[in-house]
Image (tube, rainbow, N blue to C red; front, side, top):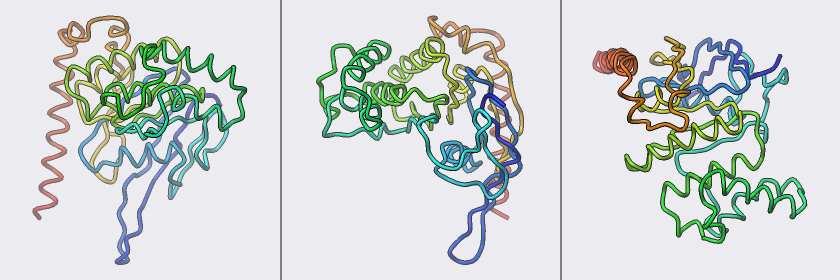
Length: 266
């Protein structure tokens, strides 16, 4: 079966004191090739745990992940990860960071150079190929991280709060870039965020998770990602449905957080 399939996945962490924490319970989700999915939920609902399982960093306690019919058992270049902090190599310049994955695969240097030039153009860093990472702003570093991920030509791009540390203006520019990359490359993208507005803007499908143990609480199919490609995202936010859906989800998350606080106090 093509695409990414999450089949009845649960995750329980064993604690040193002998107890356990049930982080995820019976997650079922199918993501078709080329879909852009955002995942939202209250703190501690297992969003990042789910992403780490999809990446192959964690093995689920129960259930399986399949990508194009193959069971995910370990990390692979088929699933690229973009972290909140770029996790870039400070001792390498921008070009060498982007070309690192293909170089490790033994790709000829001439092909690496062509791919790096193409990706620098896609992420708007054509004039920064020789810059060192420590010379770059946070937003520019995330552009490098996106390009480095794309250099491995993954089937699926997994993004864990990739824009969370950026200032508001840079974050908006990066949101536009994510939409452009999605449309230009046709990649499947799954993005974790704590921002309701960002989840609405960057989610062709938006998944709201319930408090621990994390479960899929509600799913939305939205027009805003498509509307936002090449457009002014502030105009997209003025769409009537954007405001009503944002308020609905904010109330949903608020009620979940209240439930969590109630558990903690009891």
